Image (cartoon, rainbow, N blue to C red; front, side, top):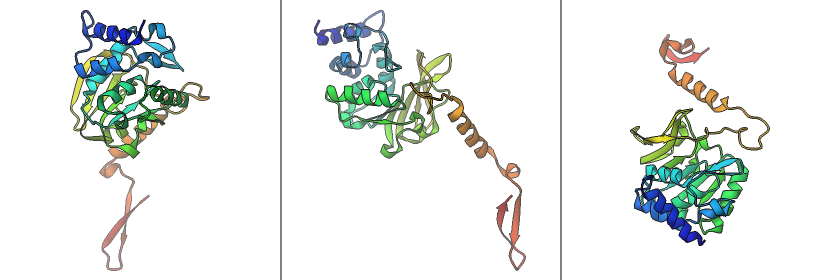
Amino acid sequence: MDPAVLREDMVDGLEAAPKNVLVDEDVAVAMRDVPRHVFVDDERTAYADREHEALGTRVLAPRTAARLLQALALEDDDSVLIVGVGVGYTAAVAAELVGETNVHAVDISRPLVVEARSNLAEIGYDGVLVDCRDGANGLPEYAPFDRILLEAAAVEPPRPLLEQLAKGGRLVFPRGTHRQSLVSVSADGETDRFDPVSFDPLLVEGEQSGAVERNRTTREDRERARRRAESRRGWEQDWIEWEETTDGNSQRGRSR
């Protein structure tokens, strides 16, 4: 069957009962335009509302992609960062909404970065920048971003991502571990909660597919150390010896 017809049926199914998932007309138009079968190995089921596997990651089901993009609330010419781009489908839909050169994406897996670049170029979105990075660090060279989408679960959003939000910006991510909810956090700290979701956790270096060593505590240990350092105040600091000037006045301190 013609893929364009299958795309129409896919979007119609998301808009209609009993799913009623897709309510944003702009997102619906974008999903009708992006050829999903380019991103999924099995063309027969590319437009079914189900997940797929590719290179050790999940290709999100259409309903999940729609929910993420609606929570992101993209506007014309928004600068967007997608963390955990996978094979690139969500980035392609975002490119339809805001323009391909406004979409930036990172993934910790080099094979997925290569795959996403190839898929996006094949259908005319080669203006999307895709780089191999630890997603928790974002993409500071191109910050600030009006919208950041984290396609992986975290208990709290990584601080670098929050710092890379523009004024009035929004970060969308799945919050939680076993029980997760889709959450939107604004640059000024306001939070909106959406429906339950289920995503794999945000990976650190060494956890990507094919890595020799896996260590999920790396980022958590670094974050705890940072919080401990920031929480030390006053008497909790190392003892300070004050140096005295020749006239007997204290001049500056030296930590021991």
